[in-house]
Length: 288
Image (cartoon, rainbow, N blue to C red):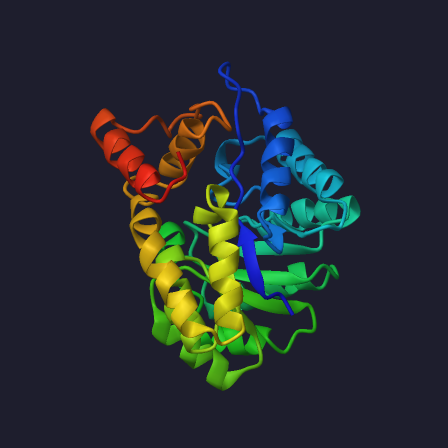
């Protein structure tokens, strides 16, 4: 079972806009040192929409190479074209990834049957699948009925819930045996209180030890300790979404001296006003 903290790791760029593989390797080591259970490269936080196929595949390869089975690698290989998702997933499987994160097909908004067939086709490849429900990004929610049906597939092992809806965790856990991971840092503890098993986290990019400790407290039933950490870091959880993800978290990592503050259009830097607010939050939780 996938339980614990999995970092939706950023893709750092050089000042000239190329993928900074040296800094990326350092970020992975930072995550491992911070005690996370795994990393999730080339997801939304990894700016996958602006990576070409060669870069996408190389990021997955480097993730596996650096992780060396010390932590799990859940490769983001979803797409709104099933053939593209299959291509990317086959590569991740060959590269040695431990699982794949499969986002709901976006923009074309398939119906329930098409969605079920799409995810099942990817799961048939043999790599464990984590479904990714994020209607705010895709324009389409994975219906509970589809989740229940897909849970019967032996390779569909978990779902990342990023719809801002704790009630869906209860619905899923009462209707099927599927691991639920929060996709919203601020809702990790509420989701775990009703049956979630951890988080695919943005905040753990900058605070891996804090997030992983909070999740471990919750998994062990130490709710008062987990709640204290949630409340301490809640301002960080909130401010990392003050603008489009991953702009704030990359800005924070740049403030920490870990990456360059570089993006690929259409994403761009954080405004000066928001930078000041984010800097104050990072200082308050002693990250800078």
